[in-house]
Image (tube, rainbow, N blue to C red):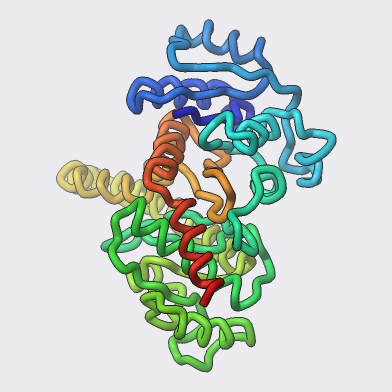
Length: 332
């Protein structure tokens, strides 16, 4: 199996991407294709003293920056590090691709270069988030700001398949993110989506509020990309706040430092649960080949786990199942 990595996407490129790729090759027995400036990547390997076993390098010119127009990934910057990784995935030269670069450009390239699964109206960014007793998937995390009810239904279908195939959740519970639990709550799109999801054949449990999602109310949380991105950034911000607050609390004085030592194992388990690096990245569900968006500040561990995520995505037939399920629903 070959997985392409945009070696120059993200805040810590290319060093952390290279280190993550080397770890993934060693641990998962795959081939990783690094895209980007070949001379700089080779210099990175020499500086780190890292092995190139199982690593291929494909030269690419330049990087698409966060502030760039995302459409450039299809034209002027199609040969940049991200564009080259997308091109390799689109042509089938690699089985999947990973990037920590511009989300907007990756969504644009994933949709129009790698292209959509047959029947998918819009791919959705689908971050995996920690709950009190479970992990849950959020769709859409920001790819589509405006959504129609039938799009939300497709998000629910794709999210349910991912949770079942990748995380082993049987008959995942689908919740519609809303301002209240009652059926009539929300804007017109939520009210209509409620009825569509109610008759979808999915395990739809109704509306859920934002606080309930983190408490394990659902396995698949469905919303439009505008609301979903605000929710996602709020969850990330609260996670950082909690880490900082706990550190201040436990290092306040000698007594709290002793308490920190006593509870160290539990604290480490909590922080590990909240650590995005353990998950790896967010799949762009609905593309014809796996596209994984790694966090912009990904380090080697995050890249390694994003590669693992892409590998599992390929092995467990998520795309084929989405295509089959949507085909059946379109025939109904």
